[in-house]
Image 1 (cartoon, rainbow, N blue to C red):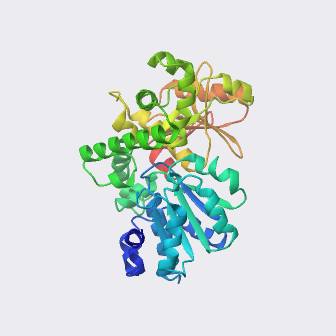
Image 2 (cartoon, helix red, strand yellow):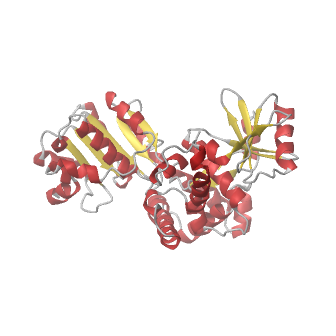
Image 3 (cartoon, rainbow, N blue to C red):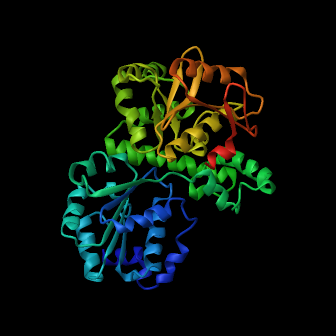
Length: 411
């Protein structure tokens, strides 16, 4: 085991090795480095292969840059079968480096009852900082909630935002007019291929193959194995969800469409949200009972992933734009709703003010987009109304704000 630990901690012998691992700096890295001031356990969660490991490398790099001895920084990846015992791994690491002060434990959900062990180290104040990462939402709901309440801080990591995607492609000032055409060109590439770090810069066929492999890996390892779900049903439900992003559904409608039992669908759909493949958007109502009775929608964590594994419609840019807006709202920590009466509103956001948004990747906006927003305002008071467009930017006589997608994604 000690040889395996050394393999994962090359910077013990060569601190400059971390320079090779840090990749594109994530937007929230500064926020994460600020968290060094708190002693809490830091849990980093998100869909598999979205950049959690690289974020850990970036945090380790920041620590070393700020004076922490690289030999005191431990990283263990529990996707490695040689590291199947957390207690033994830490024990062996301390035998190699008794002065370890900062511990990074990657894909920790592979270790049963890991939180018991980590709590002991935390309560003993054995280490100055403990970071854990995982590809399951239960890292903060069930596992952590039981034993680490009040002892941890959470960061949800997603595939690259559009701003990070532009940075990868060398666009540092997307607001400059001289960059406008390139920004829109890259926006359409972002909608088509998504923002998973490993796919950036790859040819379309290679990128798609990587995403398909990633998706199948999540189904088999993170859903089927972790929850004991039946793989064939998981595949059917996953294909249905990914193909029908943005379309209202109920557990019953999926069960009927796929000839599966209602209880199976009701049990399995939350698994896809648990591993961050999708997120559910409920119907907007001030009454919880009404929300629960209405259909819901779902969106993929990444438009590229959705494109790679679902049935594609011929004219799909509007749907992709809607999916990108949904993912960005979640990235910003917003829990959106949708609303439907005679007309429909794609997203309703509750904040300092109520905001209703429709998304259409065109500048020839159909009247139904306006009518849906106006109907919503008529029923729900003085809400802010927004239409996301391709390039059009204005405010019309009804107070509806038109914002280009690229500009909205850049915040």
